[in-house]
Length: 113
Length: 109
Image (cartoon, rainbow over all chains, first blue to last red; front, side):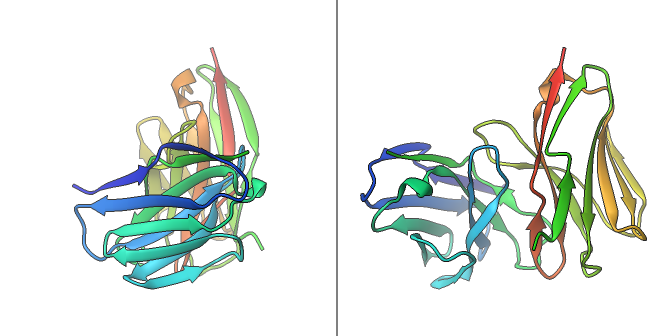
């Protein structure tokens, strides 16, 4: 069966510090991968998606970047965090871009102080 | 532009009551409509889904009603329980995947 991992689970970082969040998927090959951000009490905002190694599409211009160094690894990064980067970050995968289901990881709670 | 409109934003229901969450869409290319359930601090999990060739799908206490002509679909939770308290997202999938804005459901004992 497929599983998706995210770490760390929680993170508190000062403004201006760098960020690296990691997501890995097990039990499937060549998944489509997604990064979402969820502000407190809000919906899901798609940040990035990837259909393959090294292929990243950005949905929202921002202070963040994403990379996919391996087939089942997706990384969300920032060089300098802003207060507005605080939120709940979710990684998800699907079997194809035109996929009927997305499967989410447990999320990372990021607080920028 | 919001591709999938969801209402209400929040909902409070008594235990044993029926919870109803509504979603609407415009793009007729959508051909799959899943619902996700998210508990606090957790990732959303697929709850139930429907295709537009059926008008209703039931799984236990959860039912999706689908009105293709009106381009609307809704989630009904029968005999709502405190354990159902969560945020619910509708979604629509076709050439892309879009989520609604979410409904925070609270079921009070």
